[in-house]
Length: 346
Image 1 (cartoon, helix red, strand yellow):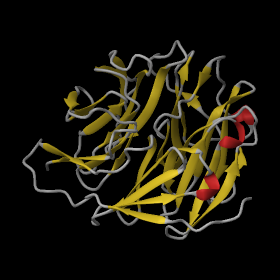
Image 2: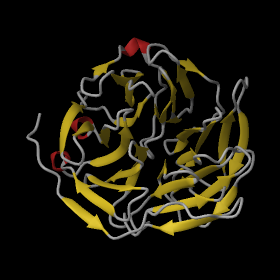
Image 3: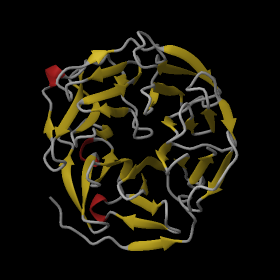
Image 4: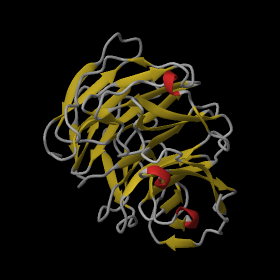
């Protein structure tokens, strides 16, 4: 749709070295020295052990976990768009999603390794707003947008290049004032072939589930945490052992205690716990069963008992999370919050 441009690369001198040997249950926090000048809401980890982050002014960083430097890339065809999500397809292909009203919402695909970006989807709805993107383990992609005409909006792709709208009548209905938050790139989550979850907020909060690649959705009767335009579920996480955790709260009251919902494998209903404040993202720590990290704009917490209890992490906050190798989690936030890596002992 727009001409392609080469991506200028800027090497940033900041460490993303491998995990050190730590005693059990301990952790270290490493300041990565990047991400201070933009707000980052997208984070992911893909093929080749490479971490990615995306943010305002079409800014993208990447770093291999066995390399030494972060590299900043630009995405010229995105202009000054806000890249709220970045996702990696099973074959290592990188996709960046811009959020904004109407055509300010768009989806970009990186052709080759840090070479050219192609715009593969532009929001066709003048009042629409893209919220989150996810690919399952077979490469099926879903993209969710705010409700249009009373139903949430979904686009689907089987190859990452061609995206088609799912018929509105197949998509979940929304009450007036209900939407999905584009806060962390994790409000839509893939957990298996054709299996996705998404969560909502605003006037009402719900968590929906599909095992048909978006053809049919069922509500999961999660706890109600909405009730105003700033409240609801903001992030979903899933562990290799099968536990699903939802976090959220009120972003206008970030230090007020928030509800955490935990759905364990084969459980019939959600368990409810609480956290110290608003949290927009939650992630299972790779290769550390039962360990989780949650972050929000004003703080962070971790759990070692699969979400039953939460302890504070000494971080000023963050917006999004991604794996950073075994036992490690990347935290991105900003502005004035550098990328951090939290490394847990074995």
